[in-house]
Amino acid sequence: MAPDPRPPLLTMSGITKSFPGVRALDGVDLEVAPGEVHCLLGQNGAGKSTLIKVLAGAHQPDGGHVVWNGEPVRLRSPSAAVRLGIATLHQELDLVEGLSVAENTYLGHEPATAGFVRARAARTATAALLKRLGHPEIDPARRVGGLSAAQRQIVSMARALSHDVRLIVMDEPSAALDPDEVDNLFRIVADLTADGVAVLYISHRLEEIRRIGDRVTVLKDGRAVARGLPAATTPTREVVALMTGRDVPYAFPDRPGPDGAPAPEPVLTVQGLARHGEFEAFDLVLRPGEIVGLAGLVGSGRSEILETVYGARRPTAGRVLVDGRPLRSGSVPAAVRAGLGLAPEERKAQGLLLLESVTRNVSVSSLGRFSRAGWIDRAAERAAARTATRGLSLRPDHPEAPVRTLSGGNQQKAVLARWLLRGCRVLLLDEPTRGVDVGARAELYAVVRRLADEGLAVLLVSSEVPEVLGLADRVLVLREGRVVHEAPARDLDEHRVLDLVMEGSPAA
Image (tube, rainbow, N blue to C red; front, side):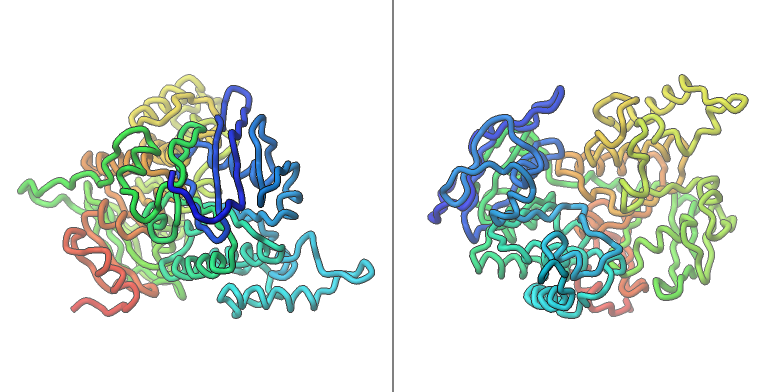
């Protein structure tokens, strides 16, 4: 462990926590110094979320000790943690959409006089916090429901700073941000740590850890397998090996070389597709076995294109053809019947029935196959779903387990299995590895490449440029709703793509 010269602000020693049948934390130690960015890494299920909830006062540990600023403490409730100066920014922001920015910022500790809330004082104080965070343009009186993902995150930070915060826990804070917004996030973190605020930073994006972190603690199976590693100099391969317990190649599957055979006929053709205010004149030819990636900033029209092709949005111009036949626009059932499947960006909210079993999540788009006189043949449904999930190595292999109990990577496999069972020919992937750990990412990349090698056509959207370049055969670069460049992935690099999405100069 690399020592930090500063006396620790937080020390957690021997923390244990068990749930029925699961030992989530097994003697975890963690030490965070004032003004430090301490990165907490681990695969899904490693114990990160449980440790955060113990620190936030949401879970009571079964054993161990917490020392705060040199004094032993008991974090008996979230309010007790907040009073000490511990704030948590969860991955799924817990804001009230119907309330204003100021009301969310001071929710639960509103400025008041004689029992009356001073709304103007709350707005003024919120404006000062937003200015400190570099976003004075956000109106404190605006309802949170109308804000972008990046703006909502700023509001959550303002709420944390509305308390006398000394430690901020950030859980996947960059997951929904584009590169410019990530830069602003890192500027905010640098300003906070310069003021002596400690940050406990959690991310699956290892390149961020090297860029922003001071030290790293790695969890695996509820244990801290490494503590205090230097973030800037510890090799990525070493971190991945610690997280997974094996040496995972940090690389993408090999692309197949040309075999000399004539190119197959297109399975998907998009001609002049447009939606007013979102994207314009989008053209695409996608052939069986091909992976095409869309690269661009958040707001460039990437996800909107996928959803319009899928029929979830109605275009204002253009058309989509499958096997040369026009597809009825704005109709998801028509798209599904034609062989299109969508794995959406918001997997939990839009792609899964979280309270239903793995089997039902896989079979839900194919239930007609198992219907007999109005009744579902459950045995046939289970058998078909199990075949689909085993082909993707979904774990654990418990078909009747609620899908919400699976890790992010295995939830994504359940979505893919649904479309394979349906006989999907064109797979639309929107942010396929968001919230997925490093080991599971490598598995998903291998699955997608294998499916393409077997003839599936894939249209991929990802905020991570290396992911687009590493997985796709061909890349279309978008800026402000327009394609500004198209090239084979092997002819591009990350710097070139970022230059294109920022400058937007059309290719000659």
